[in-house]
Length: 404
Ligand code: SF4
Image (cartoon, rainbow, N blue to C red; front, side):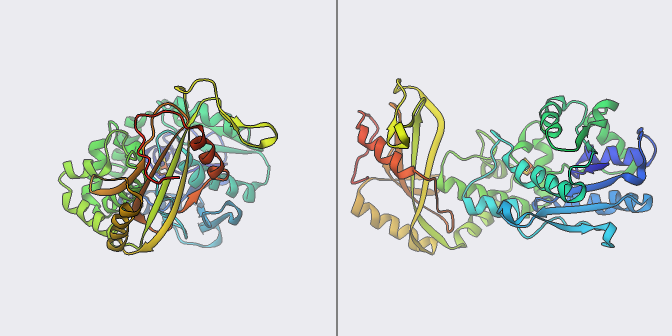
C-alpha cells in the first residue's frame, strides 16, 4: 500500500489518524509506504510542520518515507529519489530536487494556469507514477489519496485516471470517513497544537479564493515567497500582459494591497537585475474549424470569421541580449526602424506593431523586454503566420508598420 503524501492537512490528518488509531485501517501497516513528490516551491511552514510533527510520528511507528522529484525538465531523464528511509536516509524533509516548477515557469516566461492542472500532473502525478513503476512494476497496489470529504469532484476525475494505470487501485479514506477539510484541520490542531499550513507552491493560483487571508498571512511570514511569486508573474506579464496569477487580480496587486509594497519592489529589482533579452512576440488567434490543407499543405479556414477558436499559437524569439537597460534602449531604437506604438502597462514597456481582433484568424505582434532564455516557437508557426497575413482580412485595429 502506498500513501501519496501531499504534506497538506488532508494527508497529514489521515496518516496521523491511522497511526494514532483514530481512523480505521483495514490492512497491514507493515505494507504502508508514504511517498511525496517534491515540486520545490513549498513554504518553510510546511517543511517545519512535517519535520516537527509528521516525521517523528512516522519514525516512531516505523512507517517508511520516500521523497521523489523530477530529475530534470525532460521526461526522458526520469525521476530521482531524494530520500528513502528504507535505505537508511534520515527522517528529514528534503523539499526540492535539482529543478523546480518555478525554474520551469521562469524559463518559459509563464505562470501556472487555473484553466488546467498541468503543473500538478507534470511535477506530482507523473513523478509518483514513475516511482510506482520502478517500485512495483504493474503489481497490484492500493493507492491512498488524501482528498477531503468535499472533494468528490476531484475524486471522480482522479479515479478514472488511476484505474487506467496498471496495478493501481485508488482509495479515498477521508471521503469514506466523511472528514472534510475543517475536520482535518481541527483534528490536527487537537493532536499537534498548530494550525496545519496549506501545502502548495508559493505562487499556486488556487490559493487566492476563500482562503486568501491565509495566503496573505503566509506571505507576511515568508516574504521570500512573495519575491519569487511576483518576480515570476512580472516576467510572464512582460511577455503577455494578460497574465495574472489570480484571474482578474495580479499577485503584485494583491501583495501591494496587503501592505507588502517593499517586498514587491524587491521582486521587481530582482527581475530587472537578471540578464535580459528583447523578444519579438507573435500570436495567432485562430478561427474555429481551421485545419491543415490536403496532404498537410497550406491551411483551410473555418466558415465563420467571427468564430474565434480557443487555441492561440505563440512565437517568442529573442532578437537581442544584454542588460535590461540596454534592451530598453534597443526597444526604443527599434521603434525608429519599424514604427509602431510604445505602450507602458504596469511599468512594462512594449512596442506594439500589430493588435489582434476580429475577424479571425488574427495576429498580434510586439517587442518587449523580459528575462533571458524564453525563446519558444511551435512547429509550423511561420507557415500559419504567413497564411493568415496572406488572407488580408479587413480590420479596424491593425497598426501595419513594416511588420511581416
Ligand atoms: S500547488 Fe498549485 S502551482 Fe504547485 S503544482 Fe500544485 S497546482 Fe501547480
